[in-house]
Amino acid sequence: KNEVEQSPQNLTAQEGEFITINCSYSVGISALHWLQQHPGGGIVSLFMLSSGKKKHGRLIATINIQEKHSSLHITASHPRDSAVYICAPHSGGGADGLTFGKGTHLIIQP
Amino acid sequence: GAGVSQSPSNKVTEKGKDVELRCDPISGHTALYWYRQSLGQGLEFLIYFQGNSAPDKSGLPSDRFSAERTGGSVSTLTIQRTQQEDSAVYLCASSSIAGPSNEQFFGPGTRLTVL
Image 1 (cartoon, one colour):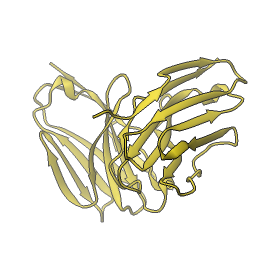
Image 2 (cartoon, chains in turn blue, green; image 1 turned 90 degrees about the vertical axis):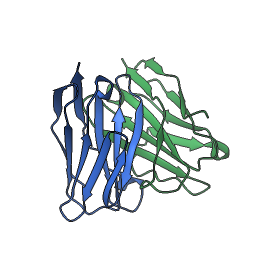
Image 3 (cartoon, chains in turn purple, blue; image 1 turned 135 degrees about the horizontal axis):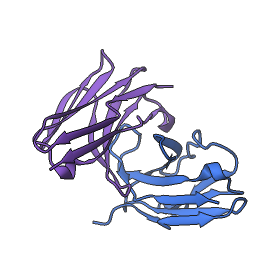
């Protein structure tokens, strides 16, 4: 089973700061998802990546397959970015190969 | 267009009762997933439907849990003889492309409380 570690578990920052959330996993993967869960529970898929880097607005996700590590960056953070960010690597095969991290609780203060 | 919907949004039941949770995926999405999110825990895979194939039930925690998907669209997750440890948010997700490496669209979840 893929062991997924996210860091930090909790992060409070000021509006405008550059945010980095890290995800490490133990088993080789075919793809990795970054998800955002807002208070109230709704989950949105931010990125799905299998190599390199993806950018969407102020969000950037990178992955290093060899090092089994991915990062999610938020530039010019805003209070509306406050949410739980979840990393989910897929080690291939069936749906049970998708493992979810426990999430990083991010609070951006105005 | 309409996203994934789930009902009820909240369900409170007594230990030992059966419950049914419903998921309406995005129209045309052939893949459907059920997950469970317990307090303080990460998401946990339960079951995966893909088209007309036999479902992947490898995540179901016990034989009290079952799910079906009628007509390749709506899905129902049934928990029989509920226990307090079943209390969690149950999330459904759908995808237009087979396989969990592809983007999934999540519903708002059903919060189940077993007293």
